[in-house]
Length: 101
Length: 379
Image (cartoon, rainbow over all chains, first blue to last red; front, side, top):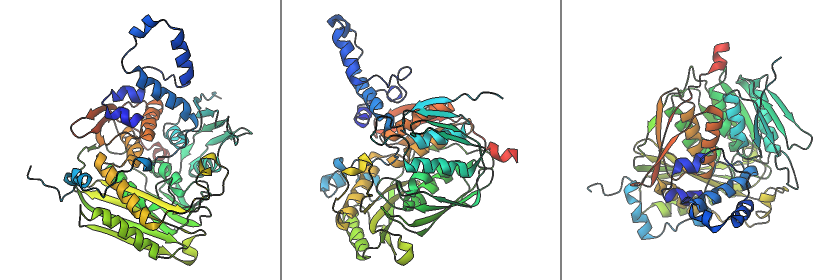
């Protein structure tokens, strides 16, 4: 989730460090409950990107005992690098690319 | 006597980073709720082993664990280092798990570190020893670590579940502090190197992996050399396995790596491993293609290091003297984000993180905490 968020160009500082002290212990459900109690008027003032924030908070909460592992390879999302179009898309990252541009 | 005040933390996540930063910043930590709700609560064997390793390389550090292992008190001592050390890393995580914190701790010791580590040299979870040689150690040199005395020797290999590998790690101490970097040019990939290994299986597996990996790279780059390292007899450890580690070297001297290994799963009762059990081993051809694809994925996302090394990169930046360091990485990995948070908590270093939309990379800037090698001065 956090990867996609960073791609969207949201404020990375906020994503990493949070707005204030992290409320990582609040579970997703609790947040939802308190929201239901609030009147609809309050929703009007909800800051943009709240959904994202909630999701990352939820992640943090679950991750208290997350595995300690620096390797991060998403094998499921692996692209098919035999595809000619894909190959051409990163050709300029190699010395064999076209540098006349 | 002054009562020690502990930094209170929760859970088992990022234990290595917490212990590492606790040691470097001389902040005692108290970690609670370590897998408290698990069917098998408390610290895992590799985590206890890591604590024992910390005791080995430092003087006067205090480790207290409660009966169930869900609560840990760690009061760091003075990093000593030293030669002729031996540590059995056990079999629940590979040697790479221990190397990651060890190479940083070693730099701030009183004496250079020379340690023999026994266990699993290659698995799919942690960076393998080959990647440490090809990518991690050159990265340290960027920060002013002398290349003399910085070495990782693979004496024998060990695959899961039985291990049996041995490596010797040498880490020099830094005389004063690291030097800050401005490292934003990732350059272009000029060559790809790599090494395959096989233990207790036919060496032909390696050729198949290489052939498959080359097949992916061929249309991009002619300069691809992957060597083989077939181990036999005692040097092959106790379990069958094979794997591959690749590194792409760029024109600006960056190393982007990817590695993996396959072997039979550990017969352990860890939840995470359950689904891996009884799985057929992935054929070597698929492994070669997979790892080549992962490497291209890493190259595509940009940055001066691969996603595995982001955390280490930030850590080294934060440990620099009070100068500005500037680095470029691809998309931040979850582990790197955790690292950034821990760096803020322990060292008080906050990075300025700015996306660079043109290249879809991220630029990070920080002023180092100015950590000096204090252990050395005491002598």
